[in-house]
Each structure stands twice: as structure tokens, then as C-alpha cells.
Image (cartoon, one colour):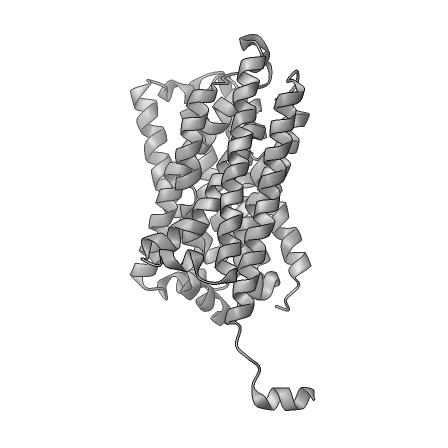
Length: 364
């Protein structure tokens, strides 16, 4: 597949849009508790849709999966399980903070963590400051953390300005303290998704060897990562059903409401999965800057979630101070993602192999 960075950026940005709006169908769910509709979100979004897509796009899918060492499969699924822990609380984060505030904080932390943790856990923390590309990237990470602080201050300001009734008009269970605590954990743990997606190159190579079109080569990696996430989500949901005596939800409301709840929860799952389908489909088009795909998805998610939060009235009635804090935070976050992406581009240029002498002579 020929590199087309602009197309790749557009595809990844579409993934960010999916990540920003996936929770909207949950608003149509009736009479079910969180753990009940989240289980169907997981079934559709983490298993049914991704595997259907994989079988439709990857020839000899099972052969591709069997060709990967168990260590690779276990690592990808393990990172998926880590994401699963973050993903569970991702929904709670939106529940307490709303789409605009919650996703801005969560996505910002997720992207920053995804940049910082790998060199730290591998004993290469010094590489964060080694050379201009590393310093540029690290500056972008620091900027994103500053942006998160501004967005958080906007949320705190909102809490002080509005009455309980006004806050709950747009976000029924708005609770800044609970939400910010959940967001801190969720944003950090959710970076496991990107660790898993970038750790399955052998699966991508096997997919290409089995005549998979380049744009679909990352789908086998995605389904393995999502298996780990599904196991964590399913266990938690069923445990909550038992703990809270909510198994009755699956019989509540009659056939029409049950079918509707399954449908809307399933649609939310499919939309959610599309953000990482877009990331893996967009990577080949990005060529030698494929490593910015996750940052593009998260940056777009912040932009679109902020826009959605405004359109849904989550910031209605707040004063100029809160609006200024929110606008400043979003602007800093978006600029920071651009800086991180530029730092990674510089790194790619430094590590790119020099053209062979023969090629240089031919060019002359």
C-alpha cells in the first residue's frame, strides 16, 4: 500500500470521532443498570464485530493467529486486559463527568501515558531526554498534562458555578471528585490498548504473507488485544450483576425494551471498536510516521468530544472563567498532540536508513 499521510491522518481522525461519540447510544438504554448494558457493549464491540471484520478481511485468519508465538499472543492479550481495567472505568468517567470533560481528561492522560511508560518500564527512561526529537516529544507530553490541568480546573469551576439541578440536566450523575479519581486511573490504564496494538508486528507480517491487503494487516492484532479486554469486562459485569442483584435487568421492561437496550448497547460497542479499526487501517497509509496514529486518534477524540459536550449542553450556563479555562485546556491539548507527533516524526527521520550509493548515483 502506497503511503498517503494525509489519507492516513483523516482515517485516524475518523477513529477519534468514533471514540468521542460511542457513548451517545447509551442515552437510549432504559431501566438497566450500568453493568448490564456494558456487558452487551463488550460482547458486540470487543468480540462479535471485530471477529466478523477479521474473518471478512483477513484470508486464512486462523492460520495467521496460529503462526504467532504464544508469547506475542499473551503479551497482546495482557495489554488488552490492562486496557480492559481502564475501559471499565472509562464508562464511569463519562457517567460522572460527561462526554466533553471526561474524554478530554481521559484521552489526554491516555496519550501522555502511552508515550512515557514504555521507555520507563524497559529501563530506557534516559531516552526521553536524549536528543532533539526526544525533547520535543517530552515537551508535548508535559504540555498535554498542563492542558489536562486546565480542563480539570474548568470542571472544578463548573461544579462551583452551577446548582446541583443545573449540573445534572446534562450529566445526570455529575460528580467531579469521583469523576476525576476515575479519570486518573482510566486514562493511565487505557494506554494498554496502544501497547498491545504496537506489540503484534509478527501478526501483521503473517497477515501480509497470507495475502491480506495492507490496510487490513493490523486487524489480527486488534482482535487478540480485545480478547484480553473482553475477559476483564465480562468478569466485572457478571460480578456486578451478582453483587447488586441486577441479573433481573435482562428480563426487565418487556421484549421491546430488552431488544432496544441490547441494540443500543451493541451499537455503542461497534462505534467504540471503530476508533481502533481506523487506527490500524490508517497506519499503513501513514508510512514512516505510522507511530503518530494513536496520538492522532486521541487528539481527534478530544476535539470531537469537546464539541459534543458543548452541543449536548454539558457546559450550558457556565461563566466566562469556566469557558476560558476549558478553551485554553483544549487548545493546549491539541497543540501538545501536534508537538508529540512532530517529535516522533523527527525521530523517524533520524533513524531512517540513508539511501544506497547506487541509488544516489541514479538520482544524480
